[in-house]
Image (cartoon, rainbow, N blue to C red; front, side, top):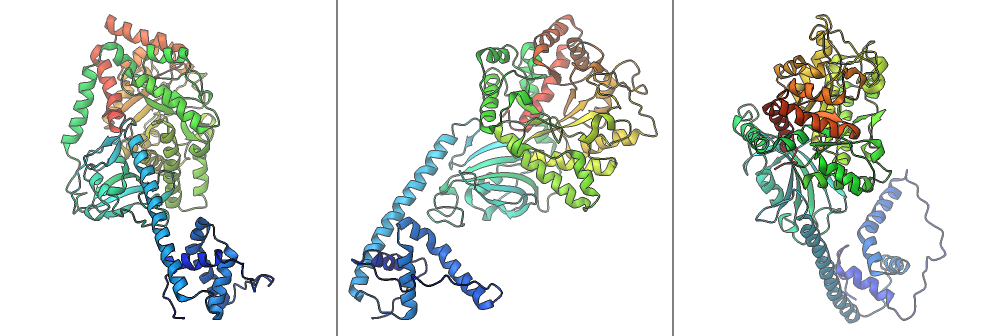
Length: 599
């Protein structure tokens, strides 16, 4: 018989395998009772032999399982060929079986591809109906997580990106994290190239690339990517090679975003404006009851803060609950920020994949590890936690604590600080902000300008900011505002005699002035007025804070109605100007545009 040339992955393998599975009587396996081979992996011949056998298994194993073949017969046939035993059928019989198998294999492959394509098209049809999904003329689908302010690349530009690619089932097939990729726009797969040219530097998109825009058609080009797969990318455009220096972010896009936020705020009545500046909590968990739904609709807040009592061990149930809360408010007014205190360690509401270690633990790592590796770990772990937060619906993190740990604040902060070194605390906080931002989560610097030895929940607090310790207290806030452009800064209830001896800073215009003088243009948020350190009632404190330049306030559900009414009454009485309330709401709306909640 003439020898036949067959590929390892070819159809002839299928034919030979079927030949033995269809033989009228099973051949006796010569090696059936032989002992298992002994693997001596220190012997090079054994190593190479095992490698070849294992490689054949990888190539053929799936095919053998899919066709329901008898692995023992397959191996026996392989052994006979190796031993020079003639085939048990004639050349013509083998050719006939081979032809039939080739036809059947082609049909099976076609059916498989049709099924895979149908699954992908079904997913895309479902996905395009989800909130925030934009569909281009080419059928590319994308969500804007955050708009950037920089220039857009062209097809010939080489760009720096954070990139994370998954399939529909969540399988990760590519990721630059915690590093980045340098890619040339025009040589990428069509869907990715199209999306990059829609992005400004600083933007972050989530892409859903249909098979027709994924360049491989019916072919798989990666061990994890089947033909006709939908490719899902989270991509952030960091910069354009050669343009970082000369192309600083132009004023136009920033101005347009601000103008849009201003336009939305100007179109709102006082009741809607008052809602935008309030971050409140919501009773309940798992299911949004009719009474809790009414609670949300009566005062549609600009933000909802999730606490431990809202959560159950099942992340999917938490996601569904958060989605119900979000949609209830979004049906009435602008979508709310969904916030959480997710510092790590003792202060984090959401556990599981969103969990983070105590910030102080990174300071402890620094004692035995290089600073660069510790900073990289903070950013990577924050990004990982942030992606889980964003997945279940959280978009706003009331973290990080950027206070340098001192003898004065240690009794209160404990492990919530990144340590006692100002440079490390600043760098660590910056890494945390970048990680969260990478996941599409707005971050909050807290607690400006610092805390004292007492717990402000239960005691009035006075903080010394003298010329000698000014830099230690203020330096991290100032530097992070300049470096990372955080979405929010939370002001603490401390009294600083050298600034304002009469009022806690949440109620004093001096705090907001100092932050604006530092160049901060985000949300100035006051800590919760249910704390004793606020020195007044929640409704009175909120009105004073807003009048002093604060943009957002926190309200417990029990206080929400009275706080909301106090804001409306203050505007009517003239103790809080409508223009000040409008500009505060504008700051919240601006960040919602920035993080993709409002388009």
